[in-house]
Image (cartoon, rainbow, N blue to C red; front, side):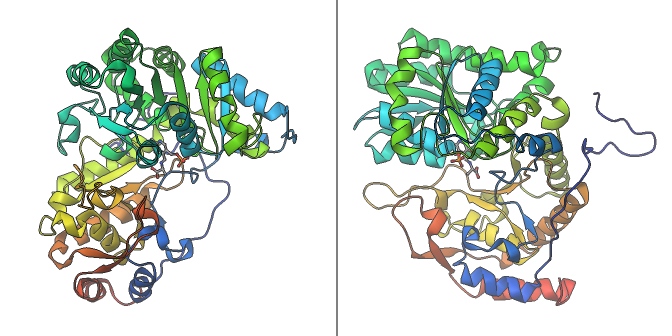
Length: 482
Ligand code: F0G
């Protein structure tokens, strides 16, 4: 269906669905939010959802399901071994990706664990356009290291580059020479590159990078968790492919790779994951890891209901009317903030709107986690829960020093088909207020710092009484009940 045109209204993104089931929200007032933020150790992962108005932490496992997906959940085939639900899911994935073999897993990071267990050894290198937290943690846990070779422009906050997730092909060649092809466990390209702002990779870049890997005998792996956003951007930004169907573009991309894995909490709009494998021998070489870590080979830790829902969700991911909603709402949000002068990552990507904390709160030193502090400020001033994607989400160097992130981002995720445009307007309004009062925001420091994935469970405190001052200014503006 073509995008909706207007007669007497500025173009706005449209929801191509209607709401059938709702979840009531409440806005906890400012004082309660301050108390809850303290209880949560200034870590938005530790908040309870009941204390949140707009949950924009992630799109993972919280996308809205369609009536067809729910209907699918009514016909699961319960079986430990040989469930028909699994075969339906596998066949759908084969139809979409053209790969025959499927290793199911309970979510994306479980796929990453299996890949790392199979291919990573101490000293081995995994080449990526950019890392994802859990993908990297599994590799470093096993003594491997990650080389990130996204084009330098991909890390520039402000850009009009259409495919900021592209890997730098010259540096890819150089890296293979330096490491030696035998020492490269695999090359992992991430579609809709999460940590640089949900930025897409071009089909040409997928093709060129995989050709280089193939030439050197290196396995290529696609992380397709955010593929649906990437497909939308290819369809709308790649002149050569604007008349191709989403399915054909998907197959053209899939054809380049030896393996494709995904988080079904994103791709498929339900909850689960899988690794698709082209080669039978390669598949058998990983098979034993599934019953060991996940569950039997025909469920891999997933519920049969979720497999049925995902099977429908994969088809929906091939529909422009479905996959356009997220990126178009994000563009609306990013453009409006940009016009106001709020530092955001441009162009808007998939997954969510990304505030650039390094410019937003440039007075906070990177060692005091500016993106973490700004994430807390968004909760204090609006009940909006975002996610820190900066230094806090990194792990310390082996010598204990901070590894300063190349980008300090606050991600305000827009789970697919969940929020309305008026809710997005509310978020825009509160971000503008916080921006105009940014000088009130101060830094954070750890009081409990776990050694791995510290952003999940770490506890922090403010370096001064800035949360109290920010809350007082907010109440003076909006009143006690907001
Ligand atoms: N790959 C990418 C690109 C992801 O964004 C994620 C998860 C994973 C792998 C891991 O998948 O959560 O199912 O284990 N991203 C979530 C997020 C957590 O909020 O960005 P998972």
